[in-house]
Image (tube, rainbow, N blue to C red; front, side, top):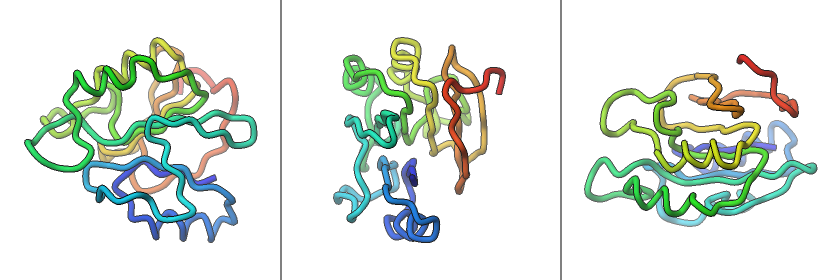
Length: 164
């Protein structure tokens, strides 16, 4: 399985899947992505649930709105509203991080408050995000939050090891 956290060209995800003999590619869009649909065989996770080998994956595109125009920019209130009723999943894939986690301190890199609320309500085992341009691994409540910059190869353990 290849998971894309946004701001990665479709061809890179498809090439990674081919090189790794992966049968599925699940992804969200980032603030630097076009508004076009993903190329086949990439499956969008934005506000959707997909299953792979008995594990449920959900996702959320974009970042907090830090400029007036662009793709996949959400005011904090809108992101919170969209995530408020999103069902529980085992793995959440997002472009932005939850508020207060792996942020970089400038307006473009503020995490989503609604995503933080989602993590405490739904308690996914893992949340993978991009956007913050750093490798990071933290706990938020019971959820292991993994910031990815570039790529990362992982074996997921359920439940995830604590204290990472």
